[in-house]
Length: 132
Image (spheres, rainbow, N blue to C red):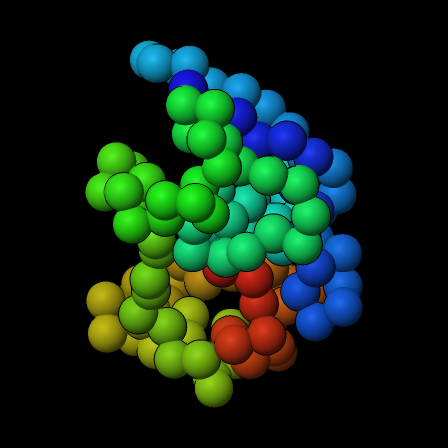
């Protein structure tokens, strides 16, 4: 059983989530939903033992994972997401590049509107959350 008791996480002195808790038994699933940048990836990394929470505890079979992190890590799998975007280029520059090499430039206006990207087109990719 995985139990998360009142965990709180700050990143660069900014609150990501506070007093979050849940329990999962064998064969259970948890669906995380929320806006981009709301802390879903940070929560998953924290539960996987890749990030440390600022308060609260994470229990695996009623034992705090910090007491046996190597064994806990052997029992779980965390598969992160990587992308092929160039972090120093803007969203627009990345979209344009991939549209050009795939000969899909005509679709760009529709894609931008469908995914509501208008407000982030000029942002460098490294400033975006992983969800974006």
